[in-house]
Length: 312
Image (cartoon, rainbow, N blue to C red; front, top):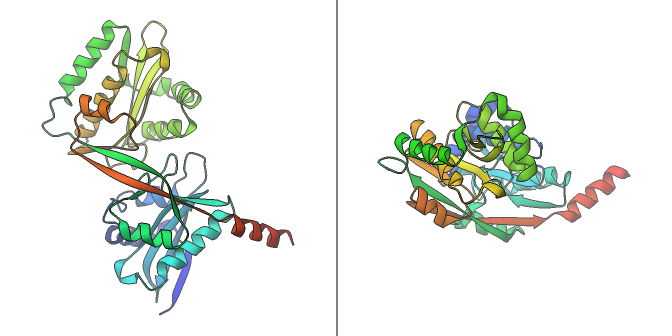
């Protein structure tokens, strides 16, 4: 067996997509392969993609971006043969050029999942054996869209009417408002959320809705979908500015997005990295959840030693 690790290019995307389809039973990684392998995260750090080949056949892929291990997958036939270890070592070398620690999956703005699915015990144990430790957890919710009376164009219309009486308009983000509203989101919430909203508003897969104060024209709240994992029907991020909370804006924005996801042909929406579970249960209903482990590892020594070598 001859094993080699090299940079993955877009020209080999379809081969990489097939590896991900076979190797990732917990996530639809193949559908969003290009986004995960090549596109940047919120910080602007690009995806640095790798491929592992055995005797000329691609058996594994991986991607880092800044300090994140965004993706690492090996075909079942290539496991327990050193392929994953070789990919991980190269990933750690890439990350050491940026920072002294490595974190799995949960990169702001571009993540396949916010951690490793807790059902994936084999991968978690494999990483722990190589020095990773659990440093956090997260949860995604599944919302049924078919035959859900809370998520219809009519129900969205009712929310619009209710909020209009209170002085708000809830509508799709317009091209005229886009730049100013995204800057407001970055300032009031986070650059990571602004990054996802910007991406959702530009592509054909995503969508963004805003709540606007009718008298002033100012942004009061926002919600988007498919700004991350475009095409998978993922909801978020969403937020309402503090002075406008408690009036139903968050509910209306959630319904607007979920109706849009339903219109795109999805039977379920996934709400990622949730905060208030009770809110989602009340407004839209929930029919399942996924829990994730976030793992981290210090690679400070590697980063330090490489800098010393480069400075010699």
